[in-house]
Image (cartoon, rainbow, N blue to C red; front, top):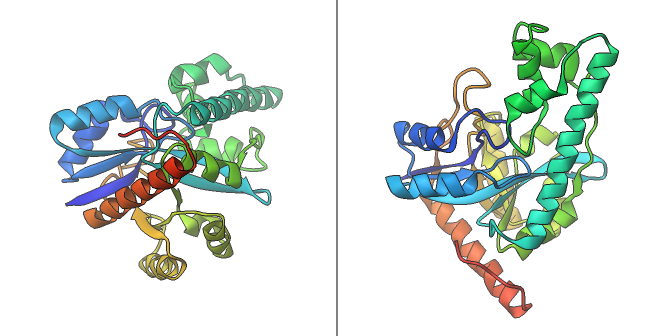
Length: 286
């Protein structure tokens, strides 16, 4: 009984449809999956319905782009109420920021004599939460780059011609929203931040868990983050951060989290619900 709690679909920058994601999860023998699309929960209802039909466990979620002291941090939200009004409004704002960023990136590319059309990017994205990978795919499709790596290296990485910084939600606001929506807040891939002091700071801000297992964490890093989570009283999670087939071979199932960690997330979720009830905040069952 294993889970993969960090998966993306076509509703953000993944390539899998909800049905394809469930197909892939079953092929690699997962018993539970979580959808954590960037700044959106649009894919959760369809994946939930398909997973339920197939007898697969499902955790609704999202990956919220935040910042702390000017540094980007990703916060995974699990078991949140998909229809929570305040969270929905803030995610819609984040999606609008993402859409404007695409327009700004294309405008910068145009100024460098790369005649990409913004309509090409939005057509490929076909979602409310587009990102740089969609611009990269458009550059490849139009023949301006040979592959996605070239698109990022030439145009889309920081300080490249098409780079545009993005406005992000404060981490404090994200944690508050997740808890208000009955969810559990987990810091994503801490190893990618290159600053482990951030973990302790977020723990003091009422973070619930730490993504200890990730494809870009070495075994020794995963062990270090597990020990850190125990020391700080944080839950342990993990996932493959799979984006479908957009990044070479699919990574789904390459991180296999013991199902007991999902049970602990559920327990924490219910504890959050009790705290909310005490504060007269509405909770909704999933």
